[in-house]
Amino acid sequence: MVRIVMVRIVLALLIGLFVLVDVAPALAQSPDSQLVAQAQKRRTLFDLLFGDEPTQPAPVQQPQRAAPQQAPAASLAPPKPQVEKAADATRLAVFGDSMAIDLSKALERRYADDANLVVINQGVSASGFVRDDYFDWNAALRQEIAADSFDLAVVIIGVNDRQELKANGETLAPLTDGWVKAYQGRISEFLGQLRAANKPVIWIGLPPMARAQYSAAINQIANVQRLASFSGGAEYLDIYERFLGEDGKYSDFGPDVNGQNARMRKDDGIHLSTAGADKLAFYLSQTIRTFYRGGGVVSAVADPLLGTDAAAMLRPPYQGLGQTRLLEIAGAVIPISRAPARADSLLQAGSAGITGAQFPLDDLLNAPIGRVDAFGVGINPAQTLENTGGR
Image (cartoon, rainbow, N blue to C red; front, side, top):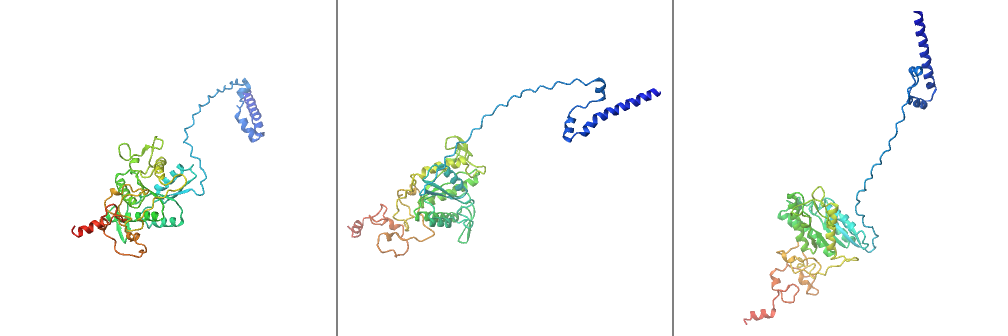
């Protein structure tokens, strides 16, 4: 019995000794050394009595296969190099709403390498000819003309104009007869300022829209703008069919300037995408050639009836003012904002002060041959006298 107790005491002393030998060095180590020591395998009493367990060979690191490099994504075509514009470069101002802002950026890209033409962005988002209380385009144009800030004008506007118009104390519902008359009057005033300042102008129609009802209203507004443009001496660029799909309906996609199928419209179904704006800029550049020849603006031929009460009447178009379709419009366009000078003042020297009621249209048919308002329909006074005498 005593022997067994002695053996247990000896074993307890040996175990305590081994623990002390194993722990003491670790307590004397620095914290960093302790972390390394903890990573190593601890020696147990079994290892001391029967030897260490044979060490496992270090695992052989398998060579990792390099991941295949992906081909770089196709990059967009590099932009045209920017060139310094000439001091006397032609100044092309783009007036209108948010559509004009997108078009200005596209024109800047198109004419980036042309030192003789500089694009001036005059677009105002959410503007139009209806809400002149928000932004008055006629007042703004008056200031730009007074400052002589541009040489050639481009206008695209109307996507915000399907709303009530207030004029002469009345609130007019969209696209009613009174609304159309007041709307056309504001456009005529706008174009009249440009003609008086001898500023050529290109008026751009509106493209089809995604929502059918809204598109129909915008198309009506574009037709009003077309008539006002023809009577106001502006070049009218119709783009409606150029942004239709193959089925003749609205489409988000279409051929770009390179003939590739691309997204032409933004998600709202109203505005043009970058590719669509570039396409419009391409079409517009063909019309710009009428006035811009790489160094200056070609002015239109002077209109001898400009500023008179006969200026707005329908007559065969004269060169350079884009009125090739005037004869397709029935009726005369009568100014509603002012009383112009009489046309007969052109024939009588020193008669600038003559005033009176405007002559009736029948007088045009009775104008003698050779007079400026005969329009090729005049009568022969001698023959009239003979018929009066009964011969």
